[in-house]
Image 1 (cartoon, rainbow, N blue to C red):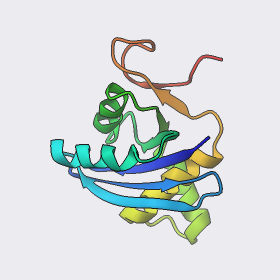
Image 2 (image 1 turned 45 degrees about the vertical axis):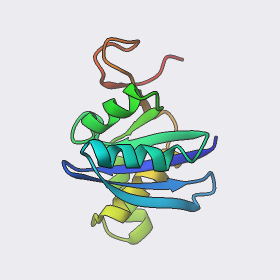
Image 3 (image 1 turned 120 degrees about the vertical axis):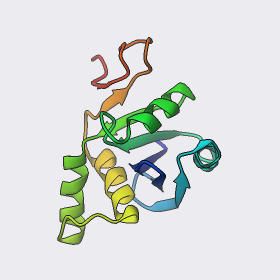
Image 4 (image 1 turned 90 degrees about the vertical axis):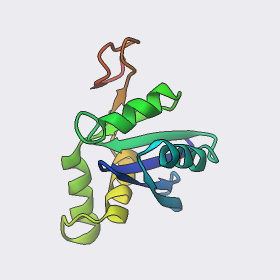
Length: 136
């Protein structure tokens, strides 16, 4: 495995953090969700060859970005908001969420949690675009 790109999505900005297998932060940033911001975010992520996106709330607030990433050929795993909140509690002693802490907790949750669901494109394998567990 190369890197995990944790994303804390919002309606307008999205915060990402790139970590390696030892949870070392390699990059971070905050990007708009408009066409230009999304392109900048994707370009920043593509500097890392072997990457997996971990997006919080793929069946909710993160759905639009997760689907755009999958459409652009990226591998995306869904991280349930409750899981990233638990990571924040253990890492900081409280569950308060700030954008950098949110992206970091999403990335750490993806690094440590086995069996996260992979997001599939609409109309492709997996059908409706919801996050689903990959076949075994």
